[in-house]
Length: 384
Image: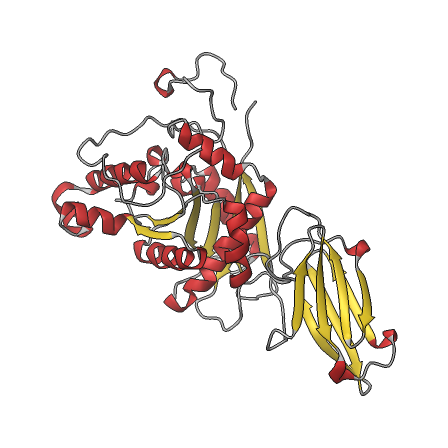
């Protein structure tokens, strides 16, 4: 039975109150294994696997793929704990001289939480966010006063998901993503090699993964720059070589790999995705879109046009580029990856199976062992 896999579109609007998640259907694709014997044995040393948000050019606001929020507490003046099926938040009330529970306002809904208290006749916001780490069951919210603390118990929709903190932030995403990714590597694709490298390094540092760049690996191997390589042998030669590098990297874990941008990049070519499917792919896509509707239409058009990058698991739309936004783009990428895996928690295991069976190009409809990609699909075969 065919498996439906979705692409998560992350659209970061210049208006931080507007965000978008869009799922686009993915189609199975079979790709023959490339043969570049001169460098297919390239193997860097790190562990092997055993088993649209538009980012504005400049922003002082924290950016998250889920949504935007205000979290006015300047310092972390709360206690947080995760008790499996629910999370608990404790805030100090001693400074507010609360007279009765009527002085406290708590509103929890979906991924939002607002807490206000009356202080000397005026409302004071303690927390206001629509970036809770994940969804809650608002009808089961309980709060009470314990001495000089406000205690709030929030029921999680997904009891199995461990919350590192009450809000989704760079820090909580990097910690929380480890349990979701399960060591699966991440590939950064897009037309700018420089942007791919910067975001990949930021993600690797945050996750504790190994940062790798196919540009650096290729230039080390060839002892020449990519530009000179393209001039002397053409972009096709570089793409073939990068495809061989990706084949070597496909059986490794806990790495963030920045791929080549432009026509010489393997990811730009639909027939070079066989080994990119081994990890989660993030497409950093530049856009002229300024609102959700235009970003959604652009994503649909790119998918229908069968653009090679549209095979990526996650799309993060970039409106221009500024190196100061690297962490914001990395955070948006992690947020979208989190939502992707939560939509299908079997994805990391399925990526692992795809690798163990040899990265045959049969993603996402993985065929049984012994399937020969060169034989095509003339005979009906059950997908795993």
